[in-house]
Image 1 (cartoon, rainbow, N blue to C red):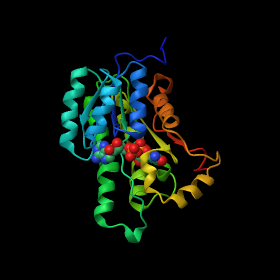
Image 2 (tube, rainbow, N blue to C red):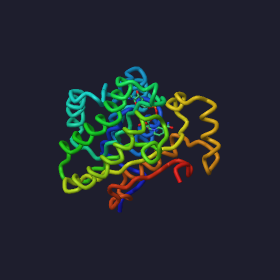
Image 3 (cartoon, rainbow, N blue to C red):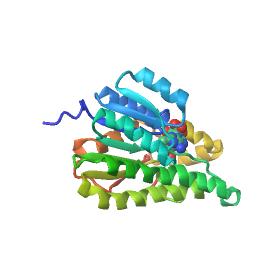
Image 4 (tube, helix red, strand yellow):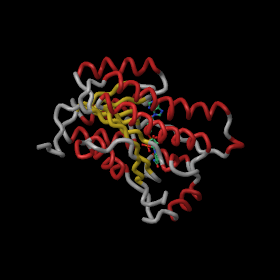
Length: 244
Ligand code: NAD
């Protein structure tokens, strides 16, 4: 019988976990007894988080857009002897109209949000040993609708499509791949949205409020857990109904 609240000995990697939803996820995984490896470019915040969460949490400097960075992470994960979950959560968000989006801004989004997710999938596929491994890709409501600026939105649609491809291709390696699509969640990321626009968008949410980090984390935990063992290639919106 699987104890859904206690996952000792499991190792889960969370990218972009120094703050926001990734940090909230790391805390809940540690509370369940997991070993968590948090990778992020924010060194100070990442190290402070690992110190707060204790020995079960290790921070590693990781730029998800850099293949060498993933190689270094492999060495850290190899020390734990196993990989049970990967959450491709790292992301950047600079929502601008098309006329204000230059090539550099567009390519930066592609590098972090899209290529970063691809490199994560490759990392998981290389480390998979045929045992159950769950990958959760954090897309967005911007991967379901046309909102959030052309650069960000195209990468989040890409993450959604890549999830389907990976789910089909990697199942034979024992890997399940699913995507989560947060709506408006109260983290530092949404500070990039103009306050008037944010208020208007919040009023459009059928549940009439924005979401919390933990409300996304609980869905990610479900996808990492054995309770979702036959869920593969699914997309789950966590948006209070904003995308309906
Ligand atoms: P956040 O900005 O607090 O967290 C994002 C994290 O990603 C940060 O810690 C940042 O340092 C890290 N990161 C950025 N570039 C990186 C890189 N190259 N390598 C490694 N780490 C990098 O925002 P959040 O809300 O916690 O975002 C988490 C995920 O949720 C993102 O993928 C985001 O696109 C997605 N999302 C957020 C919302 C929202 O409303 N907050 C909505 C939809 C989707």
